[in-house]
Image (cartoon, rainbow, N blue to C red):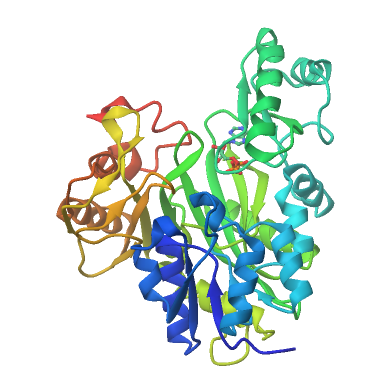
Length: 458
Ligand code: ADP
């Protein structure tokens, strides 16, 4: 197999910069791409060379321009592409086109993207591997009656979910039988417009669960390891806001079972590269919900507690190497360190007092926090940067580490306070309220925390 010589990052913002940094550390030259709207974006300058992509296309579509990206890779001599998260990261056609072109995709195979891009297929794989799933429909549902029958036999509330859903979208909670008709129709039409398919399925709605996910790495020699879990229960509209690693409220037996289940599933499907197995946990039981076959936004906190550089590992694996051999190898499962606690806050350019409306314009002042145990992953985090409305509103990921959870939380609070951002509204005051809240500090929260805690908005 050809070795990785030069890497193109098919992404923008903080994750593109994160990956360029890893490549530079590994002495691998980098190629960036940018849309016309991103011509002043920082990620462009963090690559060794960068090229305009998707000329004449809409801002989002530029980063989805499969053939344009392949042409840039070929012209620049990049023989591997890292997709980051979002955009083409889980696009099977992209992975397949790269396979055809002999370009290395730094991620799982198109087979695994297909398997896990569809939540109904993913559920089947979990069942095959003997992992507990949420009671749900046997495959997709195709009529209102099927949904109503499921509600009748399992009891309400239930949740209708788009098979191809993601990013917290394409889900509808149904509280009573009266709501089934409208919820079903809406879920389908939303799924169609957001994900291009109106296929939906039904699950029992788990009341006030915790969201626990396990970071996994697999290589082409059959090695599969986990890097412990993250607790991503602090969510707004089913999207993660603050994440913690490891969880502070799982008893050890349950943690072990969840990590083992994640490894079992990924081993069962011969998974290769980085992936995350997500679960809901309620009343001492855990249930599989989905697999994310890519690097995730919150990978930073797992790196802080284990010392494993997940992007290095992804490149190592994609380069055809054994996870446990070579210069960038990682320890065997039993020897992977677990040290202290880490928290990540997603600082966005959204106004928490105005329903998290995205703000745009120029950053007149930008000063960040810092100090021991702090990691900052920013995209356009600098004075004079222009925040446009075209892309997601993540400005900087603030991750803090402490020997204890309280110490990590207190570093987070102090760091958020140190930020000085003028010209653009951010959610920093809101995040500060989260990490200071007694229920957060005591582990006394679940996925309904933000909705049920009005004082976070003061
Ligand atoms: P996405 O792919 O959009 O992120 P997930 O299936 O991972 O969707 O679910 C995201 C979040 O939605 C979960 O963390 C949880 O808060 C909520 N959720 C999903 N399924 C259920 C369920 N059956 N019961 C309760 N909450 C759920």
